[in-house]
Length: 260
Ligand SMILES: [Zn+2]
Image 1 (cartoon, rainbow, N blue to C red):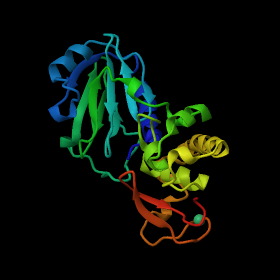
Image 2: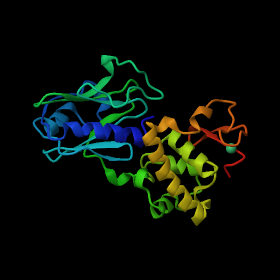
Image 3: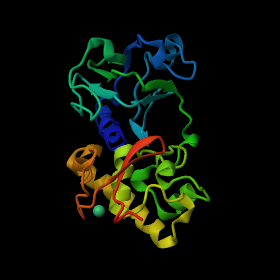
């Protein structure tokens, strides 16, 4: 559930450790280290190194280190970031508010004091070194109509599946895509290539503005469609019974009256 809005909150919190030097790395769960990364290799790359920045592309948080390595952090469905013992997000839609020490999958401590940790009950997130950003599409929060047009391409896949595909457009998850398509009055099942230029322009605008509005409200779960994400609910705008379908492998709510 952390979508780009939540990961951006994590990134902003991680700014607090920029300029600090890593004194200890704790990665107790080898499953959480991705692409063959071992605790030894991770330690060699970050121990004694200074955090130079906290950046983000889509749902990937990156911390370039003075050693030349880039630490990549992913949060999966239930991962949260804690910095100096504080969490920018207390609870996630599908996660627990409580923190079990066994859920701390990764932790950095600093010479200057404080720590940065990932707490992930379902351990679907992960840590990697030098993540390959070239496999990610442009960040959805700033997507231009040209970028969106090339993301949609000639794909016959459902519009929703393409918007969820991080290789084409980075950062959107299930809740944001349903909210964006509902606001845009577009059917999630429309073939991606079927949008005309006006629809492409309107969709690019809607992606950026929906991210902005929900960021101000406090997260991906604050959309106007959110209250209606229950079986049998009515459209909050026109009161028609909503469709509940599986699109792109995800539970999808949409208005059959307005979304065409
Ligand atoms: Zn409606």
